Length: 450
Ligand code: TRP
Image 1 (cartoon, protein in one colour):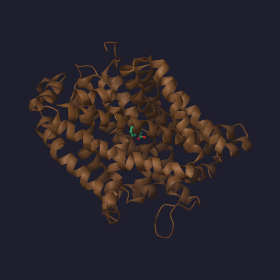
Image 2 (cartoon, rainbow, N blue to C red):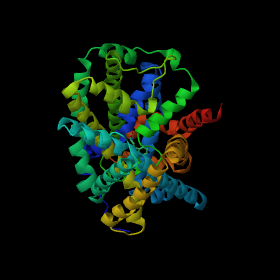
Image 3 (cartoon, rainbow, N blue to C red):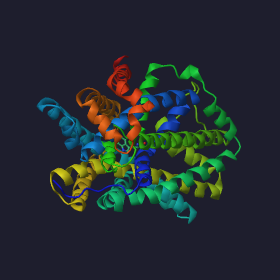
């Protein structure tokens, strides 16, 4: 049991790795699409409420459990249990989280594969290989399978390098690039005709669209997905944080960065949509709903890039590179969940565990590719609509009701001696015990109301 565990080398390393996990397709695709469809800033307001009010407390629960136990999700949940029953239950939560994390990685890699193929398509356009480019963007079976696999191999490669030498190293390399590309794209798009209308649509809230209860469900789901909650990702990253670090401020930094990137992505995507509209691309139908909501970035944005000639191809390449990087720093955190478990509890060498589990997940992803219509939507719904909120709910129960409050406090004191007198400690324990589980249940129950 005492094989040395990896650890992030610094606060900075942890923040980049954890925000790398958080910042992904959910931020740059999911959030702007939902904002565009649900009243712009009105959705943003609800989203902020959900993210700070419900997701941040659960994120803290995961980080604290992880750092306390210094172990994978299954062992960690057993450590904080009180008796044999809660121990079994906790391990069940851990196993379910691992399964959910693998399933999420399956569909995520399919989507990330599309990003790679679109990136290569722009590159081919630039060097005048237009037939190849057309094949790449046609989303055919072979292409879908091939690029999902390439993406998975990249993911496995990074995870097999370990915490410092893989996850942290690559997060530090990739995240600044992501931020730079995003900033440049925002600045560029905002100078184009039509962008200001989009900016208005984004920043002037239309509350008539944002009051429906279903929207709360979407916002909560979005917040949980965006902060990578419920499945043990943040728990395992928390387990690699040194005992001298202040978890409260780390959690805060990660939440803040995640929300910041979502808001920034909105500043890119919504104006880009209206620039496309200005250039003659139809984006909303008569009833004011987004056309092709789910393929927004594969239809509207490429149509926009097409209206921009050669510059458009470079912008397109930058955009899909941004998406690929965002997806990669997230997928490594998904794979780390099962890998950490197998390495620690079954004494398998990390490199071997990464390739083994990665191969199994690749097979599962191929099954999704081949049965796309049947499986894709179903697995997305199963994991993100049901799995994540329910697992988040269980984590609240464990931290709020089962784990000894004094142990939680002891854990937080490491790295933050004054925590007992902080606002955080005045609010959070009550919050995670009563408010979060109730609110999650209330929002969740909306799923079953017609
Ligand atoms: N948060 C990432 C995004 O927004 C995706 C992600 C990474 C994730 N790890 C996760 C989602 C674990 C759910 C569970 O794209």
